[in-house]
View 1 (tube, helix red, strand yellow):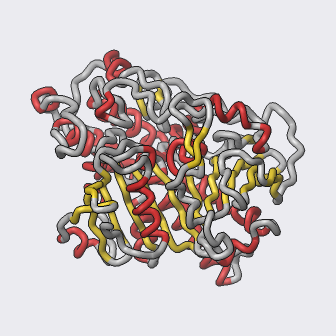
View 2: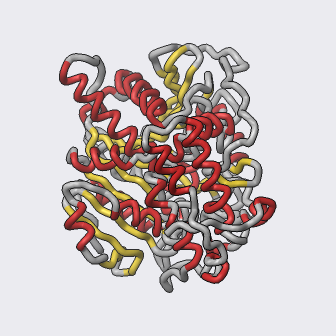
View 3: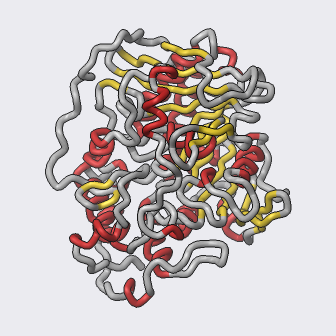
Length: 486
């Protein structure tokens, strides 16, 4: 049962541990908060005029940055949706057999956060050093056996620039589809259209991933029917890490996580049970979330986000880092990437100053209340369509904790759900070392990684290397295999 939390809002800022950086913005001292005054109107256009080529790519090839494996092609630059909307991308060919390797798309969350986070802190060909000054080659890069395409979206995020009008996951999906049509029609990348396609994402990607995948499938159907023209996207895989998908099932997880000791592989107790039980009044937040998803207006959904994040998400974390609880307040890991990206911006074709999260894009989403709209129906559609789906989570993450994610999975209604929910967890071992626990039924799998924070591939487990456990579940899933121990 959801309970109200009787903590004065003035304490919330300190409860966040001073955390100033991360995929999810802070508004008025509340992580995932909503402005109490209206956000500024979206910009009509960029402040600077760029020499765009609407409907085409502008590319820097083989910049020599990040991927230094001999003979591996890379390209970065912009896909210009219109004269005033440009999406930045960074592509790395697979280190092995790029001609036949699948194409994997990577999206970070926010909403409004750059996919360079995933590239440089988590799973790309290089990883930022702890002093943020340089990068080192990543032996567990996801481009080992997959072509990787990192995309800064929506427009305005990261190095992307232009009219900041997107404020829903559905609108973002349409722009990403348009970008991919441009990308796959370019002669340098058109051969990839026949290869298998995967979507990988995290955090707000719990919205992005299912919404994008469902939109791609619907567009493919329209192409086959002749009502839409375009390149068919050969979608085979969806992976979502530490994702916000279904708030009504996930928000009780904040109370569970905050009040419980985790396994011996994981984080310490966040708050005492006595503290959590101090609030005994039934929480009206559940009603707000339900109203939002019963065809609620933007204002109803935005109000649900504001109330729940003010009264549940933010206060319950106490003095711990929301992205990696064992660290305590304001964890400096993963290291900051802003100074490094500033130093290589022109080499990779970036045209604007990189920012981790675009606040206006975030505010656009907060205004529509997209945060509280469930993506569960899209996730169910994608699973039932035959796309292989993996949900993964780090058990040391609070902000999208495994209690909430596993409750979301339990609420799914798919062709695999009955069997999956009856199944017991199995150990997930990597090179005979215990790294987590998993379930798998048909083409649907879930894995909880021990000791990992919000950005699961950024962490190590025991004597395993950083990213090694994540590399195993990625590799198995991309090979169209169910998860298994090694």
